[in-house]
Length: 150
Ligand code: ACO
Image (tube, rainbow, N blue to C red; front, side, top):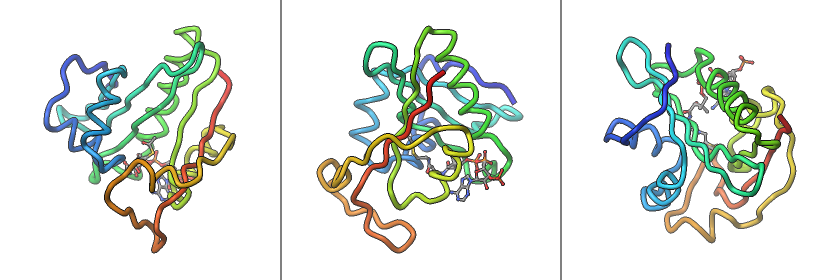
């Protein structure tokens, strides 16, 4: 598997981005300002990673997704490690990531990779998403923010 920067986002990339974030307008807005990478396996799109410089010395992973057939094989862990190395090489000090309070698997994954919880943005998903999101039988309301110093 190789991880490489994406010069121009294609439909297959959006399919992946929308797995992590169902709102296409929001996705289009932040990918314009992000550096995006693809994980390619046997010439097939296996995963995507979008990194957005937010504040000085801070990089946010705004989108990470792995195509269904490739899930459960450690690809997201590789993408997260790639993001941390990219941040170190780019002189960033902190990498942030936000996820839904109902995204239990993702919360496990990020903490397994060393991220720690920093804050909760209450009602984030009610304020920013027109469509209600239900996950793990709960209405998604709050965003959990996590970070790691690199
Ligand atoms: N539920 C339970 N456990 C999970 C989940 C999950 N949804 N995702 C990952 N894990 C666990 C795995 O079991 C594994 O644990 P282990 O090694 O201790 O057994 C560990 O996390 C690493 O898993 P990977 O195989 O590296 O994860 P994968 O490549 O399948 O990708 C991802 C995980 C990105 C969450 C994938 O399931 C996905 O694309 N989901 C849909 C999109 C999504 O939710 N993206 C994140 C949104 S937040 C954001 O983008 C900022």
